[in-house]
Image (cartoon, rainbow, N blue to C red):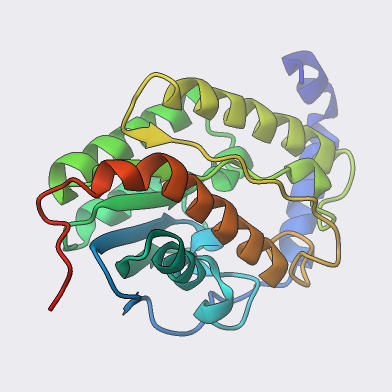
Amino acid sequence: MSLAAKLLLSPLLLAQALRTRHRLPRLPEAAGARQGHVGQGPLLRLLVAGDSSAAGVGVASQHQALAPRLAQQLARACGARVEWRLLARAGLTSAQTLNLLQCEPLAPCDIAVVVTGVNDVVDQVPSHHAVAAREALANHLRNALGAVHVVFAPLPPVHLLTGLPQPLRWIAGADARRHDRALARWVATRADVSRPEVELPLNRGVLADDGFHPGEPVYRQTAHAIALHIRQQVWPLLKSKPHQETPP
């Protein structure tokens, strides 16, 4: 999307954005535990962090959301005891997610899954600033919490979010694709971070009631895709680590 086109449409886009903020229902974060353990076998310590899509906005219970589903699927796929924790808050950008992590006393983790990006688009954060924030996130997770690998979820296909009117949906979708391409280019430069492919054919049947946040089918598919990615590309690296011991 050219800057000239965005400037030309800016009065309409601003009006649509303001109306959308007032019109969309304010959905709560999913209720339920934000830490737990599941499975038997070698220990895998998982941290899930990020924005509303990490916090489970769009479903009633954390059991329907991303973090517990991902832990369950990893336990089955890897034959592991997964100790998981969720640290997320609706509305956070990538930089704000870093601030949240820096302010919380957290136990060490082996793998971190970070779900951010949509609010970078909404808040018009330049893509290179969002990438810099993710790099700082990865460095903090590695240096402060001992994460061996950080998985950054791709941005969703914003152009398919039915809760957004046109042309706002089209413009935001183009921005999201640009942010996601920048994320993909950056993760290719580091061995300790990755971005899984997540196929999300979005429509009213799989989204939350607001047409903007994920519904239960989206969380289920995302957990499956990230678990498969970790099992194939990350878990083999972790099995040889000294702390990977089977609990008594």
